Structure formats: structure tokens, C-alpha cells
Length: 388
Image (cartoon, rainbow, N blue to C red):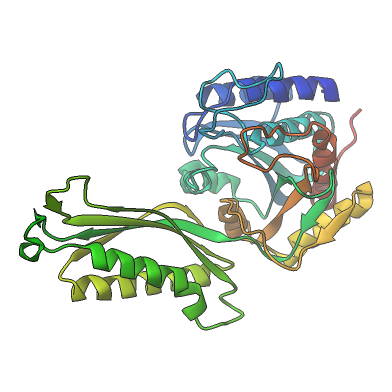
């Protein structure tokens, strides 16, 4: 039976790091993963899932639940500043979120399942596109072929700088916040700058909306079901640079973030309501667009318990978080589908550069730790037939 030692997995990880691809452009990355898995003889291979995604199915001899383990394929539009031998060979693109490491962990899992099939049910190893844009998980779940892969349990990990190397952080309930980019467009009428009264400038409205957005979280009634909320204005533009022209349009871009999907719904509803009121008072038309939409990633109690049990079985240190992670992840699409499961953080070290920093690099020491944790979770749900 095939096997991969840690050195081979590190070579794979570094090769993936050298050849990063942006969201929904991960064709070559998918081919690399597919080539690795051919040696593992999965019972079913699905390609082009939700775009460039892949699913590898390992069946047990007896009926039982379906367990899905998810990894991501995509990289980020960030120029790498590291000078090591495996630095990115693609200008302006690099693996600054550690998805190269996540792929290596789940590939290691594939090698293990090739040697030790599940006893009951099946295990689906899923490599999804476009996590960074929030589109990939939705694309995979909406793919017609996903119906035949419908999981009972879903699990994923994400490396996490600032947490001790190899330590797990997990919690039941919301693990990652819901977030979305909101674009507010205001339309008035340009005029000569000498006679602004002949036009309709959105300047006052833009300022009022920004002020209201900044105070929005404090104005939402505190309810446990909504959790905490945050608003970050990231960009604003008024007219064009033309000193002879009074502006006729403006745009405000803001990131909305909430600990719950209900909280996000309230944020959107309130932001649109007061923006429309301000626009109407200033005789402006208004429109809204949304981008990078992530729902909250919610861990079930059983999913959290299985992660904790895996930590105890593998003697991996762990902490139960009091609050959700503020960053967002599209893995919530899978737990919402499966009903049971969890995402957990795996510490990348307190001295590691942060995610999305240009000098970040995934720590290879996490590959066997992540593999062992996933294996223990699978063993408890599906059992493992030892064939070696």
C-alpha cells in the first residue's frame, strides 16, 4: 500500500507553495493533488467540483455515516517577501494563508486511508476552490454532484499564528464570524463648482452615512442571539478630481462583521435603512452591492467534543475558546449542510508572522499533528480497518 513520509509531504507542501493560484483559477493545483491521490486508489474521484474542486471518496465495508474533511486550494494576491528556496514563483500571488499546508495534511490523510479504509460509512476528502473570496464552499455545495456526497459530519482546520505551535483552539457554537463587504453608491447631479446649488452633491450624505456606520454596532440592541458586531469603513470616494466640478456621485465601502448570522442580518437591515433615509433627505438615489460574503461558521457540540477527544487521544494540547474568532471562513456552508462537525484552529506559533502577512510561511511541523487529529476523528465516527 502507498505511504508518504513527512519529508515527501514537506516536498509537496513546498511545491504547492511555489506554484500558487488565485481563487477559481486553481486548475494546476488541482491537477497536482489529483496526481498524488491516483496512487491512493480512492473508491470514487470527482473532479471540477464547484469549479476546480476535488472530492476523493473512501468507502467502508459496512453502512454508516459520511464524514467530510475539507481543505482549500487557493492562494492570495500578495507579493511574497521571503527569500527561501520554495518562495512563490508567481509574481503577486502567494500562499499567505497556509492552504498549501492544509492540502498537505489532507493528502497525508489520503495516504493513511489508502492503507486503512474506514470500517463503516465513508470518508470524503474535499479540496475546495475559492475560500478566500467566500465563493468556493457555496459553489461546491450547490454542485449537483454534491448531493451524492452529502455528509453527516464535516471537519476542517486552519493554522493560527499567535497560538502556541501545535496547540488546538476550538469551541461549540460560532467559531468564525459572519462577514461581508457592503458597497453603497450614491447618485446625485454634477454642477459647475461656481454654482453648486444647481447640482445635487452627495458630499453631506456620504459623511453622514460614514458617521452612522461607525456608530451602528453600539446602536444595535444587545441580544445574546445576535452576539457582537463590528463595522469597518474601508474606502470612500466622492466625485472625481476636477476643481471646476461639484461632485454628482459617491461610494462608501464597508466591512460588516458579526458573531452570528442573525446579527449580520440585523447589520445589513439597519445599514440599508438609515442609508436610504439619508439619501432621500438629500435627494439622492442609492444602491447597494455585496461582495466577499461569509456566513458564520458554527460548530456543533458533538463536533467540538470529537475535536477535544482527538486532542486527548493524541496528547495534543488544546484550549476551549470563550469567544469566536473574528476572521471569517466559508466552511460554515459545510457544517450547515452536515449539521454535525467543527472547524478548529491549529497553532502556527506565537512568533509566526500573521496570516496574510507577506513574510508568512506554513510551519511543516503541523502536518503530522493535523493528520493525526483528523485520523482520530474518523476512527471514532467510521472506524478504521488496519490493512498494513
